[in-house]
Length: 301
Image 1: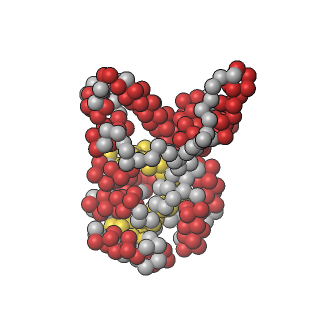
Image 2 (image 1 turned 180 degrees about the vertical axis):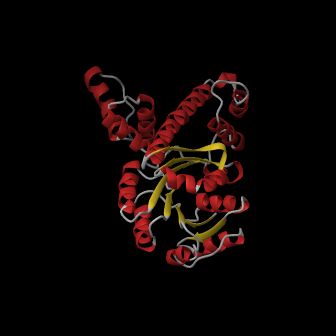
Image 3 (image 1 turned 90 degrees about the horizontal axis):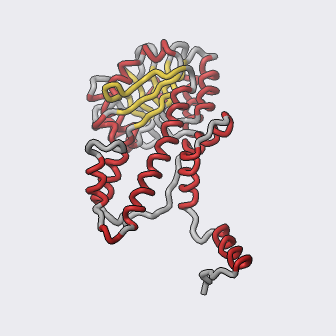
C-alpha cells in the first residue's frame, strides 16, 4: 500500500523503515527536512511539506499515518489535513492521544466522510526489529481496507481491532497504566533485595534467572536486567521519574467510573514523589513528631 507518514521521530522513522522493508510505499513528512532526508535514505519518498506529502498520494483511499506527540501537535496536524482530504480518505493517529479527544476528532472528520483510526502503539524503539503492538479503534471497514499496513508493522498476532472510535487509544491508556504498576513493583522489589547488603545479590543475574520460567517474567524484567548489567548501581541516571500522561488519564478514568485502581494510582503518585526534594510536607511531618512527642529531628545547619 501507499501512505504518508507524518512525523519522523524515533517511532515514526522505525515504522517507515519497517513498512518499506515489508514492501509498502511511504512518503515521509516532517518539520525537519533532515529527518525527511534520513527517511529517503531508507527508501521513503521525500516531501517538502504536509501539502506535498498529500499531493503525492495518487491512489484512493489516501492514507495518512500521523505519528506526532499527543495533544496540540496531533490537533494541529488534523486541522491542516482536513481541508486537503476527501470522502473515503483515512487518517491514522498513532500518537497515543487521550481517547476522548480521539472520539471528538473522529466525529469532526466523519462529517467530511474521512475516517480516523485511533491506534495505540506499543513496542517502543524495539518495534522496528521486533514488530509493534497495535490496538485499533474506529470504523471497522476503514480498518479492514488498510489492514495490510497493520500486518506489516506488527509482530505475529500483534494487532487487533478493538472497537469504535476511541477504543484503540482507550485500551492503550489502560495498557500504560498497567505498565506503571509493573515497573513500580520491579523497582521496589529490587531495591529491597539490594538493601540486604550481606547477601551481595547480583541483581542483573537475578533478573536473568527470573526470565527463565518464573511467574514474574516479562519484557520489562528483561529490560531491567539489561540496565543492571550496564551499570549495577545505575549511577548514570537521576531518580526523578517523569510521566507522559497516560497514567494520569487512567487514574482519572478510574475515578470517573468508580473502579478502584490502587496499584496504578500509587505507582503514579510514586513518580510525583520522585521529583520532589526536601519537600515541605516531609518537613511538616518531622516538625509534628517533634511537637507532639518530643521526637528528635534532623535539623538543617
